[in-house]
Length: 151
Image (cartoon, rainbow, N blue to C red):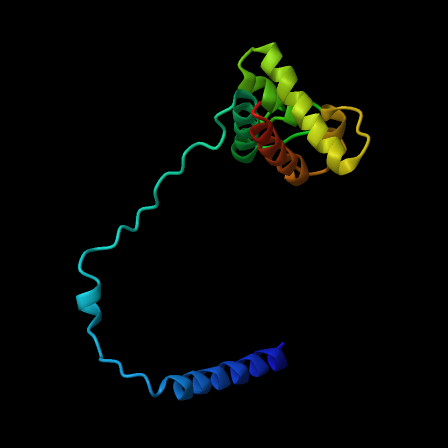
């Protein structure tokens, strides 16, 4: 690692010298940076528009956010600590609309199957993992799939 760092430093030094040599003939006048920056910079990031304008994508995005903030579990829809499995989070975010819940679960299962092959169901996939990293990633991927399909 030290050798790579030293080699990169040498290359950067050589590039700096080459730049100075190649641009020495160009006349430039020094300038004051205060003349260039005349107003304070806006350092507050602008809010991005919600990428999930479609109902299924919005449900999947909220389910992903629920798992990030409330925790992930397996074996049950909701555990005693309030953590949810993938389907439990979708069910909560569908707010009782069984049609939206079924559509969101179908998009999620399709996304899982494209990546992992033949998977029996969303709960079976969820329960086959010892941690929430992959299930949460699949919810995030399914959000993009639903948005791209206009669902």
